[in-house]
Amino acid sequence: MLNKVLPNVNTDLKDAEIADLLLHALEYREYDVQELRIPAYGYFTNEVINSMAVLVFDPEANAAFIRKVVYEDCKDADEAIAEYEKEK
Image 1: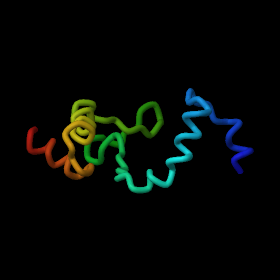
Image 2: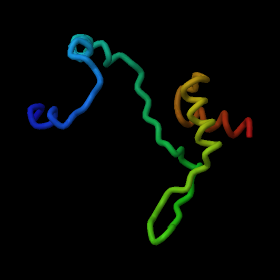
Image 3: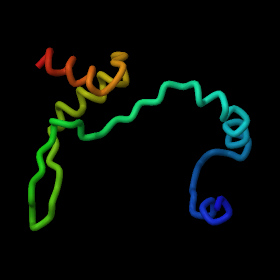
Image 4: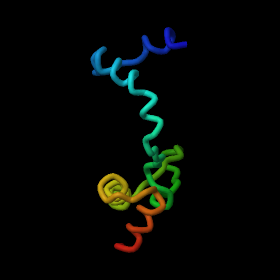
């Protein structure tokens, strides 16, 4: 499968960097992984524009959401949204 997929992958990582990532792959399982959706739930609307279904998002709210998750140590998206709502 890798022989089919890898020719379609572009990266600026050097071979040594990729090898280092592979050598430490088992350690990465211990990392806390978060899944985020941008735009955040509740901060967009579904609309039809020019006969196309689109998400129209609130840029200010979504930027605040990203800042809270990345820089303010919120443990998950729900906490970031709650913090944003308190400040709003």
